Length: 207
Length: 207
Image 1 (tube, rainbow over the protein chains, first blue to last red):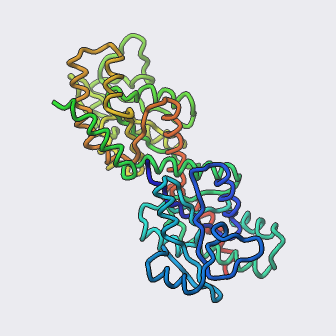
Image 2: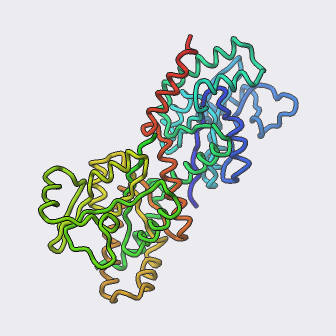
Image 3: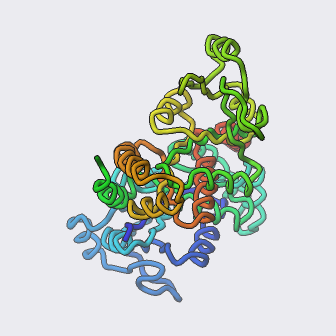
C-alpha cells in the first residue's frame, strides 16, 4: 500500500480554509485532519481526540522531550503542537493527513517532511477577501483591517508553496485539491516500489 | 490568458500511447497534437497539416538553418522534425500541445523547454505489456521480443519523467493526464501574473 501524503494547508484569514477542509473530509475518506495536542482546558462540547488531544503541561513537556511533536508553539500561556505518532500512523495506513498551519510553520514542516505537499488557499482577489471578511459580520473594522494588512504580508511568501489553490467555488476548490494530491501520487519519487516491480517484471525479456 | 503547457508523452511500444492521446483529444478541446514536418511523400489519405507538414528537402534544411525546429532527426533517408512556430503559436493561444516522442527526445525537449511536463505511459506490469503486444497479432514473435527487450532498457530512464501514468483503464488514464495538467497549472511559477495581481490588490490594505 502507498503511504499517505502530508498535506499542509495555509491561506489568508477569510480564505475559507476551514470550510474547504470540512468539505474535503466529507467528500473523500482518504484524508484525515491532524489533531493537535494542547494544554488548554477543553471547552463545552469539545471531545478529547476530536478537537484536540487535551493533556497536562507535564505530559506536553514530556512529549517535547521525547521528540513526540513535529512542531509546537506556546500561545497565551498554553502549548499547542502536532503529535508525530498520530501523523505517522495515519500516513503509514495510506491516509493523507491534513495539517492546517500558518506560513512559517508550513516552511518548517517542509524541512522536516520534504515529501509533504504545501497548498496555499486564496480567494480570487484582494477585493473578494475584503468582501468575505466583512460579510462574516463578526469582527470589528479594525480587526478586518488588521487581517487584510497581514494578508498582504503573507502574500510575499506564497511562491514557496507547491500549489496555489483558488477558492472561488467551493466544490471546484476541493476538486483542485483532490486532483493535485492524485497527480502528486504519479510522481516517480513517490511510486518507487511500483517502478522497481515494473522493471523486475521486464528484466526477463532483456536480451 | 494562461499559456498552454507543452505535454511530452513517451511510453513503451504497446503501452497504448496512440489510443490515450486520441481519447484525450476527443475529451478536451484544450489540447492539440504537435504536427511534425517531414520530407517523405504523403501516403494516400494523408493531408498536409494533419498527419504531417509535407515539405521538400530544401525547405526542411532551410527550416533547420532558421532554427525553426525544436528537434529533428533523419530516418530511412527522410527528415522528421517538430516545427517550433506551430508549437509556440498554440501555446500562446493557451492550448496545451502534446508531443509524442521517445525518451532521448523527451530529455532534449526538457532542456529547451524546462516548463514542459514529461509523462511516461506504462501498462500496469511487464506481463501485461507482453499480453498487449501479442494481442495485437500484427507482429512476429521476434519483433515482439525486441520490443519487450527495448522496454526493459527504456524502464531505466523513467524516473526522469515528471509523472508516470499507468494505462490500465483508458478513461482513468486520460483522467490522470487531465488532472496532472490541471494541477500543474496551480504551481506558483506558472501563475505569476495571477500572484502579482493578487499582491497588487492586497497592497492597498497594508499598514
